[in-house]
Amino acid sequence: PTFDEYHNYNRVYSQQPIFNRTTANPFTFEERLVFDNRFNATKTKVNGEIVDSWTDVLVNEEIYVDGKYGPVNKVIQNNDIVYFIQEQAVGILEVEPRVQTVATDGVSVELGRGRVLYNYRYINTNTGSVNPEAIFKSQNAVYFIDVMNKSINKIQGADVIGLTDIHGLHSLMYNNLDYNTLKYSNSVNGCFDQVTNEAYFTI
Image (cartoon, rainbow, N blue to C red; front, side, top):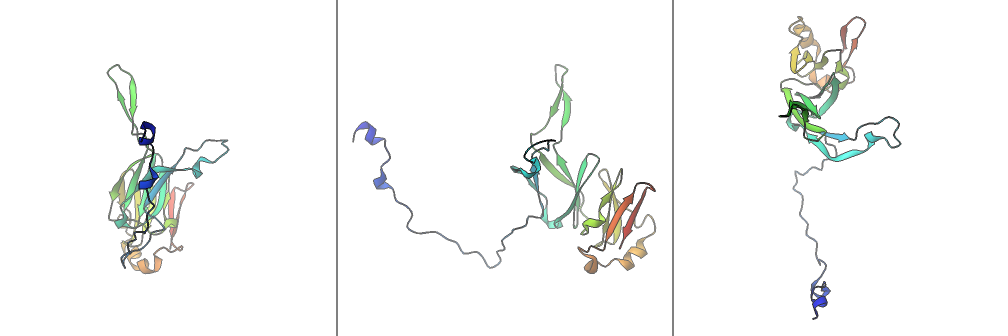
């Protein structure tokens, strides 16, 4: 062959596959259509934009929390902290964290990783909530009912504080909260009254 023919693609030695390889799924295989422990990030919302940026989900901006604590039942923001509450855990989702430092020339520099979803960390793995309607926030805290542990809790900063025993409600909660009845039930609700500065729960 000539020099040009030698470097051309020779179709004589090419062939499409004549059989398909398949593998049988094991009998315990279950196809997952709902990823209840995954967070996805979108583009930043801009006022007056033609296409809503919240509908543009970024492909590589996803993070999975530990699924052994159950599905994520609520994501709630209080001040600058984003909390996620699972069935048996409470955690903080770190969104675009920035650390400010001073360089050698005296100029302030912000350090980051360039990702929207940076990391997550658990602040308590002994309590959680299965009732999203019973998770709400005040000015400085987030309140929720844990029907599994039969308790009322408050998230303040990076701490989860149990309010049931502090305020003498242990017997009341123990006698009136049944996990099997109230699991994922809409009858467990809560709200915060800004005027009286009180948290209300209904069961």
